[in-house]
Every structure is written in C-alpha cells, then in structure tokens.
Amino acid sequence: MQYLLMIYRNEAELGKLDAAARKAMTAEYGAFTQSIIQSGHFKAGDGLQPTSTATTIRVRDGKTLTTDGPFAETREQLGGYYLIEARDLDTALSIAARIPGARTGSIEVRPIMIYD
Image (tube, rainbow, N blue to C red):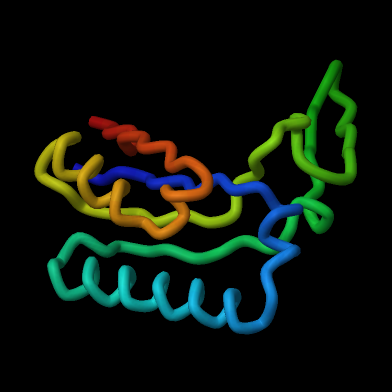
C-alpha cells in the first residue's frame, strides 16, 4: 500500500537556521532518503517552496477565486513530502518517525486512495 508522509514545520523557525545548521539538516534528509530508497520503500518525495510562493484556488458558483498563500493560518506549514510503499500502517508510521522533521515539526501519514 502507498502512503503519503507530509512534513509540517514552522517556516519562521526554519528561516532562523544558520548555514551550518541548514547544511546539516540537508545532509540528514539526504541520508534518510537514501535509506528508504535502499529499503525499497521510496516512491517519490521533495521539499516545497515557502508558503509565500503558494496560491490557493477555490471555485464558487462557477467563478475561480485565487488567494496568495496557503489555505489556512497555522503554526506549521507543509514543507515537503515522501510517497512510500509500505506493507501496512505500522511500517509507514515507523518510517515517518525517522524523518528528521519529526523532531521539530510533525508528519501526517495518510494512505493513498485505491480505486477499483
């Protein structure tokens, strides 16, 4: 089964990292990514640009409305994701717990919809 692991973090806190801390974080994510590639769980994944680059679309009464920024005001923002293959939810949760961002943010684990 496939699961989407969504990485939420506080963008303001991330912006406070110095170059050395940012480099260390990038290396840690690189090592994690390589580990799930080697284990066969990795399907896709990437970081996202800051929420200041986002545009939200809503269609109401046939009219398309656009809003700059994310759809909701929250303390944590979606910063990236991994799409993985895992035999069950417990396996997906154990992989999600190893994502470096889990220590300072949160990881939402959601099964991918299966269509017949």
